[in-house]
Length: 146
Image 1: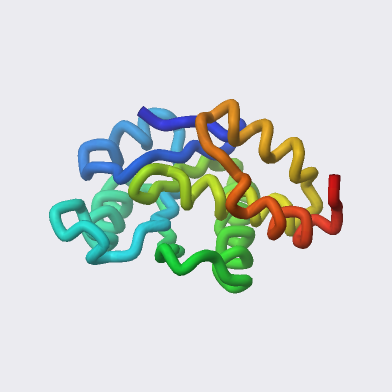
Image 2: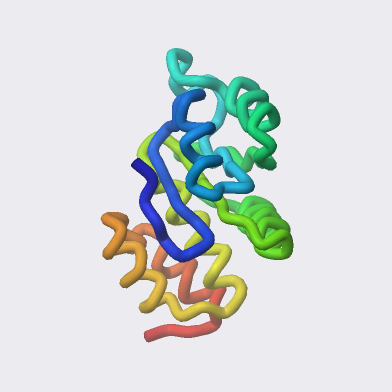
């Protein structure tokens, strides 16, 4: 149900309130919502997931990504959220409509911290995601071009 990108992060399509408990059972300590409220009015909105996460003892962070793309502040917010989870020895579940925006934002955050874009692309591809839409950004953020 959740797709691992690394030992400490999984991505998923829109999660349900019931899946918050499933995430907790799988060791998730932070949920990152990359979906803007109102994108799908029939889906649980951010406040709903935040309340379920709080009830389960899971941190919740909203970093909504619209179809307009990614910004520096969003990448920095993802770095901060991942850093907080890692400092606490925790595992992250990031979600959006399909998991793609969460994967792309994760990869941008990793690249900004110096990770190899080719390796990030391999990891994402193994998880079923394509980083080619942000590959130039990955190269620029990482300072590498391969």
